[in-house]
Length: 167
Image (cartoon, rainbow, N blue to C red):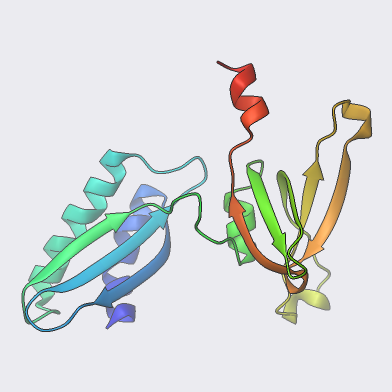
């Protein structure tokens, strides 16, 4: 049923310039929870979420897809939403991220986006991205290409040094 809901949702998100990150149905019985997570580069505001919610609710009711009562939750991902796909690294390019490696070490830096692959490599399931690790002096900055095969989790983070400079 998630794919059917996503099909109803797609024209709405396309019109608003949003990406569908996840559609899930949970709960059982009389009150199922339909949860939709959407985002776009730069984030999605409350008005965008509200428009998706209203549009999808109208579509769900018109199609009578869910026979029982349901609750609809439309949200954007939080900072702890894991980046996994090439599209994720493109969407959050330029943002500060935290990389937790399989060996439990971690790095923070600026996401420079997915590594461009040759046509031969496009079939590979492994996503690689470039992380800019900023030093105290800009000339000491370094870029690291990281393969998702090396990591446990990648999430967006807050660069507190940057936040304090703008306060």
